[in-house]
Image (cartoon, rainbow, N blue to C red; front, side, top):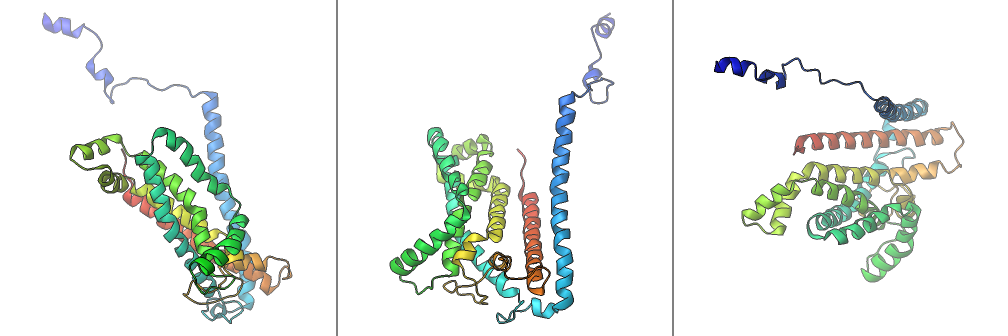
Length: 313
């Protein structure tokens, strides 16, 4: 009796299981199909642009190396006309200085906005920090030349620097990428579940210990992505280093000296003094391809770090 009542009581319990033949599909809306198509085209367009840039670089580079030996290009001799390693070392020098400025300040700003600032304070402070990203890079360059070098480095700190030097360029470059690191790192900190913070407080940790030992490790993948993105922007910056770092190749590890970076060299070469198609002009594309490869490697490292430390909540 009871078995009959149970059998006729309603649909089988198996109807809710994944293996049951329940038709949950629905016809997609026309708007959804259009949005998917737009997103797909956008993704393919970005890939096509990257490939197009690479193709545009390859042909002049082939002509360049047909006239210039590899040894002359990949040379440490700053007196060599086509040597690229002095440009690479200058680029790495200014970028390293920029990271020493931007990483502590950017992460500090992100921690304050995420963990300490009130909602009202965060509402006004975060857009204010991000305003730095809207300042034209040429303004940063003139700021480095007109204030940082003569006033800060020479008058206040008493350093024996010239009119152009890698230190001033790196300092201002670091200020420029602070909003990039701060904004992305703050988003990563805010994405950490509140339950992790509450569990840390329940164990007796204070706010600083919770921020450094719980929130920061949990958001490490986002923080790494923010730092690498700031690094990529620093490597590709042109106007600041062209104005403040110098326009002469200098294979040196002294940041107080002037030196020419890869982007600074490209800006000088593209200034119109070199005829199109000449070997000097094709040097622009050779250095550009080298910079492209360096940036590509940085992005690959970024992806590996993000995948290595990514945590899903």
